[in-house]
Amino acid sequence: MKKIISFILGTVVALNLSISVANAAAKEVRVAFFLEWPTPNQEDKVKMMFDKAMGVPVKWTNFSNGGAMTDAMLAGDIDISYSQGLVPFINAVKSKAPLKLVDVAMEYGMGGTTCVTSKASGITSANGSELEGKKVAVPLGTMAEYVFDESMKVVGADKSKMTVIQMDPEEGAAALVSGDVAMACLFGGNSIKAALTVGTRLLTVQAARDAGIKGIDITSVTDKFMKENPGMLRTFIEVTHEANARYAAGKSDMNVIAKDAEMKLGDMKETLGGFVFLNAADTKKSMESGGNLDGFLKGMGTPNGAVDTSFLPL
Image 1 (cartoon, one colour):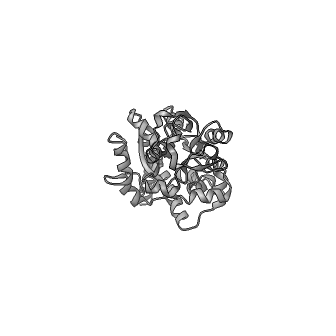
Image 2 (cartoon, helix red, strand yellow; image 1 turned 30 degrees about the horizontal axis):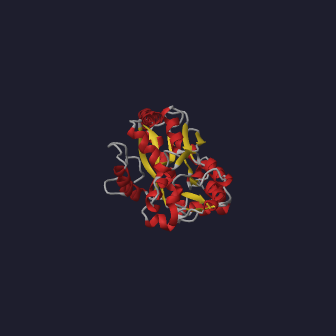
Image 3 (tube, helix red, strand yellow; image 1 turned 60 degrees about the vertical axis):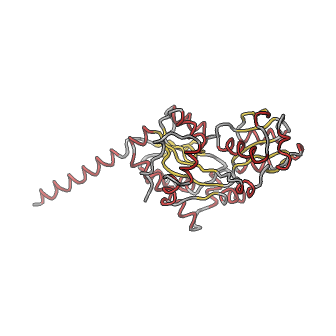
């Protein structure tokens, strides 16, 4: 009888081990993220909770924009892009890139992504058409470009009559400070703060909200990683949502998040306060037909099959 029980237990252990191995094909998980873009799961990143939950080392690499994240994923250097801008993802899947959208990282107003005009230029929303003929810095292929496009519609400026220069946020802020551009469109707390030392927001956060300009960042994954490591992907999303719930309950370690985001605590809190982190159920609603994310995707001509809600912790 003991031999039979031992055989059964051994079979169960072997089965569980084979399942674990099947769900842990990768020896490490490589994740892309942004600095100056604080999120609750950065506490778990620092405390290595992702590593513990997923059972392998998790390597985090910061990127300057979502387009660079896409390039790294296609090159095989990144498995998961956390809080990638929606526009870079859409551009990628329109080009038939083998990527999937599996979660909403956050929704946000224009506190964390905005266009700033220099005070020296004298340009405001009231005379926005004066941007025509001027140089403006825009990180192309990002949510900041989307904000630029939508803001120009609001102020009645023709972007085709401007000299648009590709610059990442840090570069754009520096160009605005030096007077090389009349406006810089940016994301990230430190870059926006630097730009605001010599400029003002073209549209206030409230004005942008009233105009319906809202950002959505997402979690994207390569088809290869998703198919080979579904358990790991599901765990990554679960840990992230647990971090969001901890933040909603006021239990996040804000000092840890600020340090990892390379921001001062006050600046980090201000940026983080402009983000909305959806629970899994609301995320699913946003991703499905009729939801906020779904509407954005359809409006941008995203091909069918780009979204997978099956990894959400419901």
